[in-house]
Length: 311
Image (cartoon, rainbow, N blue to C red):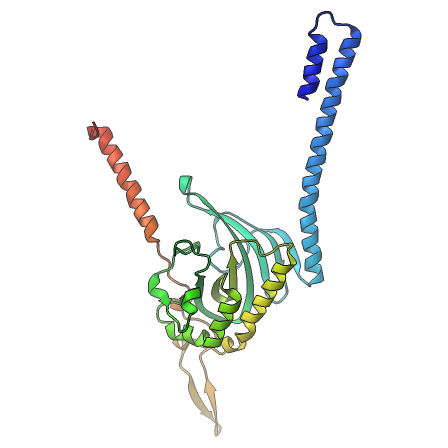
């Protein structure tokens, strides 16, 4: 467009202007404008085509694997630390099946002003068939300087130490009073499965769901990611039957009832007592220190403005 305008200026700015000069100049400007419009439309169409191609390929993948596909899903109803009412929450490329599997990607923001951060997660979730205590396995491989990358901070009084080298790979959190239950659920063979298949993922067990979190997309066009994800879920849920036998003795005691000369064992109902349903969160000490530092700086600035402490 600039070249066309410059060419027109040369024609119209070199002295006398004839009718032919005007026709040539106007034609050059119109031609350049047409090129810009056509090129812009082509670029926009190409961007739309690429975005649509991803959705098309994912929908074909979903249909081939008996899954449903939602390009964008609002108000995703899943328990877990990355869900709930969060600012700027957007969930996209969500795959589901009739059995409770859900795989997708999500972004949300926390903080405000200079402390505003955007978080991006990939997630996968399956139903376990029974409610379990709230447990979190914070993978150590994705922490930075030994600081957890989880979007929430958990009370360290809830952290358990397990046998073997499990602690090198995960920090396990269980509600206070549920330590024995966590040991029942995480037997050595179960711990080995998590170390072998999920050491790069953060894991959360909440209500009747197992959730896996990654700091990258898990609903993707990469077939290797899907192959690895399905293999991981299959390996981790292979012991679900063992977990389904767990009962929370806080809901009642196991006892024997004798009726008509026969005895039967009565166990507590399925479910989790109130104090085991959610872990306790805390404010990380880093944010406390930063908050105190900012408050102190603000107070000092006010005193300096009022009394001129700094000459």
